[in-house]
Amino acid sequence: MTNPDIKAPMLPEEIERLSFSIIDSEVPEPRPFTGLEWEVARRLIHTSADFEMPSLLRFSPGAVDAGVAALRAGATIVTDTFMCLKGIPRRRMDALGCRTVCFMEDPDVAEKAREAGTTRARMAVEAAAGLAGPLIFAVGNAPTALLRLMELMDEGRLAPALVVGMPVGFVNAAESKDMLIARGDAPYVALAGRKGGSALAAACVNALAEAALRR
Image (tube, rainbow, N blue to C red; front, side):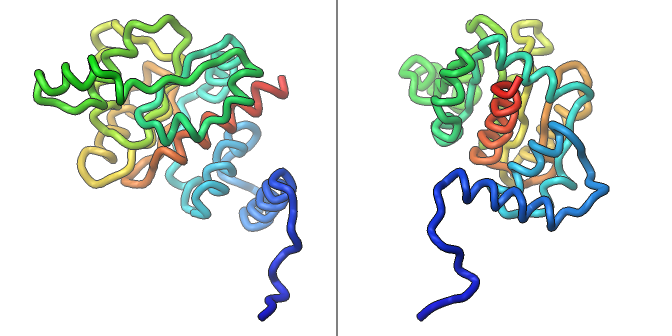
């Protein structure tokens, strides 16, 4: 069987360019975002094939510039899952002098979570509090991680260069993101509502990294 709509084999970069072109054509101007904000929105659509992404996407003023500046300064990207960590290619991070870390499988984190009767995601954020900055937190799975991050910000123990707040789910996911959006004291890129996920959090970082590499 053949399908006339099937494209001939292409290289990955060609597929990405064509995908972005299709997205641009299906979201006509005037678009809800421009410049780097649109690049982030477009990559989220590319990752999810979900054209609702722009309507859910929230940026604090200057967030994309803050993220790009942090990446160009060699930021550490802290992820709440290994899926998110693996979704941020080393080729981008190495070129920028950045690193990605995830403490979810750290034995001390697991032990402290058991002792405290809480989640590893929450304790993993605690472990990240000792890292030197600039720090970018990419949260795509665990609302408990985002909630603990904001508590540590309130305590003055963390001052992230950027928070990517995109936990997915039905329990505290939307609420934790609403809290982040309402704060106004830290640069953030967030997805309102229940949608999100590790792949989307990674996609946001990747869009900012591409911009940082161009500069």
